Length: 121
Figure 1 (cartoon, rainbow, N blue to C red):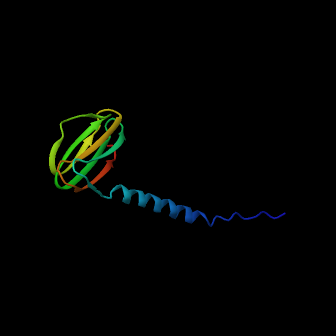
Figure 2 (figure 1 turned 135 degrees about the vertical axis):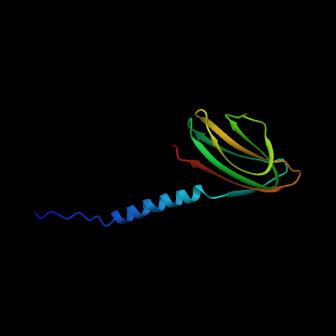
Figure 3 (figure 1 turned 180 degrees about the vertical axis):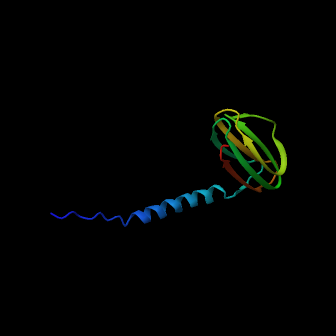
């Protein structure tokens, strides 16, 4: 009985699919998101971070935005009233950290933001 040769024609497609998935993930993680927020409305984005892990954030409002970072629901500092900001935050301990954007106006405004995890050094 002759041995049958294994057909591995699916292997290149699997590699292409894996590369495309990784590229899509990297592209998606760098995208800016935007939302029109009602007067005094809140956008909160939470991330599980390990001790020493850093996230890079950026946001911009049409006008003033109250911004703060919370750990486990507790504010770590008083909200700052800013039209935009661009910075980094490094977790001092493993926990859930939330970036909180509050529309400080008495009318709706569009807030644009992006958050990106930084590789650990």
